Image (cartoon, rainbow, N blue to C red; front, top):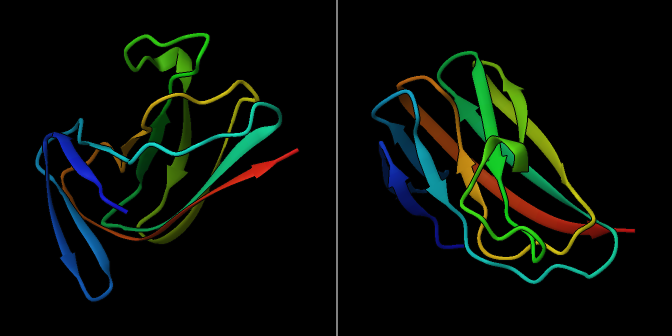
Length: 121
């Protein structure tokens, strides 16, 4: 999986995953595009170590709403210092384009262990 830096982050791959260093309070990354089913929902599972308690967020666009990333089309999950397993259920509309992942709203090093994207009906 190729992750790209968008805003206030540096990325480094190590043996345990990808180190996302948040350089500000609005760090964001871009995940690769994937095919989504025309019906049902998408669940994104993310395993990540966080330096402290914060909020993670995923932004998405759909074939019906292909605007820039917005709060309206996002999901948030609380993150606690240490290892977290986060689940984001995205709507049944067909996802279009890449996902934006904001690991947290705090400066520090986040360790991304894994990302899984699955469809459910």
